[in-house]
Image 1 (cartoon, helix red, strand yellow):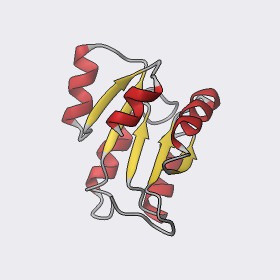
Image 2 (cartoon, helix red, strand yellow):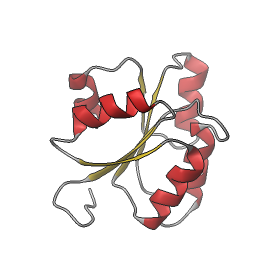
Image 3 (cartoon, helix red, strand yellow):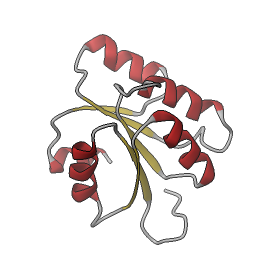
Length: 121
């Protein structure tokens, strides 16, 4: 993984729920540098300004869905290769298929446990 400005890989956590962001950040911060965004537009701006090593992305967000954010990330040369793991409450098979179709590398449903999250990351 590409690590910018630190020896720890950078994970961009994108979720509209501050509680989810706090939980995920607590689970990961011992091993990774974390950055957070509360929506799709902010996530795209952050990813283009400083490419993360991984994006953990919720699907259901106001304004722009996580699927749309992933499509955008995959359309830019600078972020095309950044892996995206969807971290969402949507647990339908069709949602999971859509996640992979738009370029996600994994799909984790909430609530998530620390061992599962760390293993997948």
